[in-house]
Image (cartoon, rainbow, N blue to C red; front, side, top):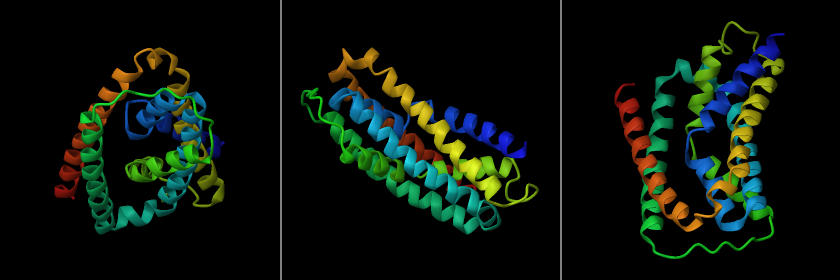
Length: 207
């Protein structure tokens, strides 16, 4: 019963956390526009694999991170550097005037690797899942074993993948405006990176 509760709570939290436009889901949508649904689906799979690993890391390190503020600061500073680089990248991509070639390439391992890379660059899932683990007291009150860790990580992966898959399914609604979407999604991603930079700075100075 405890494992079921952990799974459901974590699944819903992961799903809600990925639904708003962000680095990974916007990458999935952009891939659908530029390379077709199958490649977008494979990007989602690649991202899901990394999210599973991130959830394992989060729940295993939850107690350690809560007990060591220095580790929290290092994670935030690492994220700050990544967000700065990505902000510049997306702004350059948005300013680069070129048409969107909607060639439907065959889905392959490259799309999976792309999803894994983007998800790996997105460092916020780890502190997010750590916060969820802390809220459910996985690092303390609940017995800390694989019967807790596996449902938690699996639910985090499943919830995130479900939200990403919705972006693949809803791709048809944006396909007709592929060029505009590709351009403005890059601007959106650049602004999102700036917001995340501000959030990271605030959290760094408040810790």
